Length: 338
Ligand SMILES: Nc1ncnc2c1ncn2[C@@H]1O[C@H](COP(=O)(O)OP(=O)(O)OP(=O)(O)O)[C@@H](O)[C@H]1O
Ligand SMILES: [Mg+2]
Image (cartoon, rainbow, N blue to C red; front, side):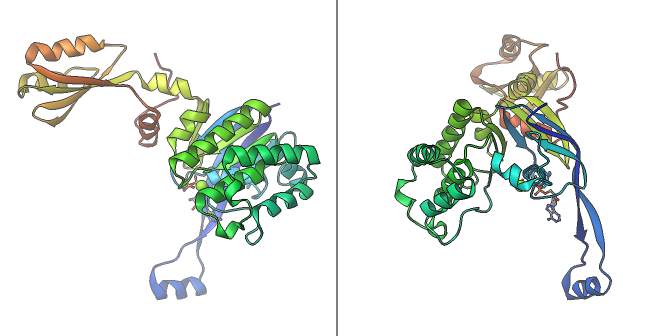
């Protein structure tokens, strides 16, 4: 059995329907109207121990709702969950001992006490043995660069400091599973890097299972081998990151700058199946083509036949384009590729 398993997992919320303005508010007070919003619909998830999974999707797709159900904060409307053999909602305490969770949008630290005291409280709550606590604390302070702010209270920390402290707090008890909901939101590049290295290290050294939600595609590229994309509450892709990239890399793009406008070529390219012309101006354009149908040299020589090429460059697909294409509905990833 996988470490995280969900079957037919669904969550709906009742949302108030209010017309705008005071009149709408009064009307709602007298005759309240609600609609049922399906935030997560019949999800099947299966994550193996030691995996690092990116869980991505547009705003409102249902990512945080899924994570909240997996952590036991929210009760599912339907479906079942098993995390390390435990139902997280029914056995909250047992579940808490085996997971760590970071919600980038809000802190889980005690607001008014020094960070180091929060850590010490967590040691008691989770009954972390002295030796484990000492080793972890020292390593976390070092790796996350927390020495300069460990004696400040959470309310005094900057966002990046707070996020590092939250991450450390979530992992002090060596949980086998960690859920990170936007752990790098709003952070500068150097703090982001620290956080990524830290996550990588705990995954590699302790085989911690990591489920990561992020809008930062750098996080995904750096950390995750597997990608799950959710949209409107349903999973639209679940597979390896490299497969998505190679499947998408079926399309290549070459950018050209030419000495003079080439209307005949433009006409010809726009009528060629498997090629797509995108004109920036009279003398700059790009050609995207299916690399299983054409080679790059065929495309370049076709352009050179018509006129002088001043410059050209080829661009490979990156994960940003892949995800954008999926969100825009322009890429059916579940189709079998060539
Ligand atoms: N407590 C709630 N009450 C009513 N509706 C909710 C509640 N929580 C979430 N929703 C709705 O459920 C949907 C999914 O929200 P969720 O927070 O899971 O999205 P998300 O994928 O995490 O988005 P984001 O990238 O913006 O964080 C949204 O339409 C949201 O309005
Ligand atoms: Mg969210």
